[in-house]
Length: 495
Length: 104
Image 1: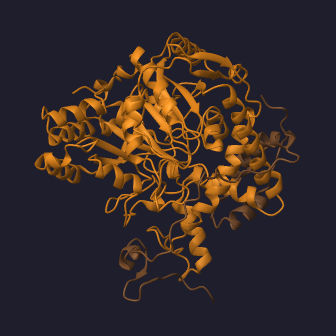
Image 2: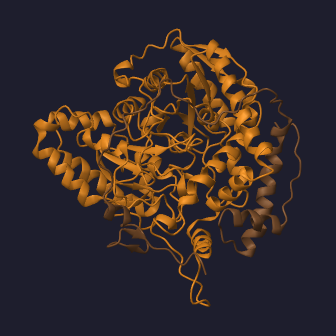
Image 3: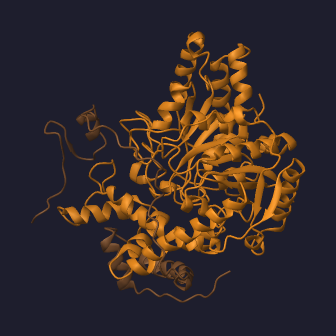
């Protein structure tokens, strides 16, 4: 099996008996063993548990025959709770946290036969766009070892790009599934807000967070979304909107679909190679029968300011629970003092348990919510959020999807933007709007830079219309081979 | 892209006051760093002040088309020992989380 094996291949091989689930899982684990010391995509590898489950699938083939993901190796971002398996969110604060329950998405995937091979590295509490904010060190881009894999779901994207897993889950608050997918050359889908349960996802910004698949192909993402989507009693924000068989809708027929092109947004700040790949992807979609329509998103330029005010405000509230009482880490008292009182313990625990980016965001969010600044920042941001949403409503009266590059540049070098977080934030310009407006969006590989770094095309759709995004992405992948390219992993592979 | 930028400056005292609200112990070098970085970001985000939002309702959350209420019925929940298992200082027999002294 090559690094570019798809979920469909693996599932079909296991169904036909050509390969056993144990063989498939062993291959995945052996890739992790050879590649991960260099790439650091995983915080925890669940080898024994995975093999045990694979044996169970092989021993009861009849029972698992119709399970859509039987035997498929799955990597989970380490902010998704797994019962009995350490779940850290890449934070010192949760370094030894072992959840007493599974996230709903984990339960659903395991019921469908998927086999968890490990928990993937990410930015701490999903805060970052580079995976450099992991307390356990950055994951690395398999296409260029000295570059970021993107973030925050960097490890999940790396695991799929290198065949260490066949599918992975990420979470996306401002682009954290789509941007690493783009930078690693795989498909990433952020579903509509409310499509997928957040129960068991460690909360960052609750009005923006959404769990979604990272996969080799749109087809594989479609299969996975059909498994994880749908109402959940444990998450009141999930929708009862029916979940279609997304894979069955991938006909290759995109004739008559209207694709919105927000040209004025792309006029500045986008790398030339990215722009070339984007335009040529649009031409291919047009050649298949889609129509390109120029649109305006007048408030899109404000999205970064709005996003980082709202996301940090929500984060400052969500992360208040990490205070040294319930979740593992508690700072020891100052050696100079015999005792510490409660508030000192809180502040010392949080000051030493959180990393710099998390602290920065808690500070910004606390400020934005504080008396005297609430109206100027938080309320203002919520109002401009409404305007951004209305821009999309107007656009969707004219078009079926909006197309943009996923990120303005390909993967940058590790360390390049650490000293200036605002530069990292600005790289999220094309992804944050979908979260603010609750819309589904997909990133699909659409080429390489002259330095051979992957580039992603992002399509954003109407609420609950993942079907159209997947149909377009699948049609595009029928005409292209970008997703079959193999990263130069022989350079990093151990013996 | 930006209509205008307005410099925002934070003093060490202001940063320390925010840190106190957030219950965060910061080192002097973190105070200095965050003073600069919060100022950088808010200087950038101040362009929002120029957006005309008169009469615009704020959006807090993307609502559902249908409410997803469920019947108010007692159902099994986490076992108490399991809920205490991750605590740094649990009182398992009593079923409590222990914390340092609250009142002197």
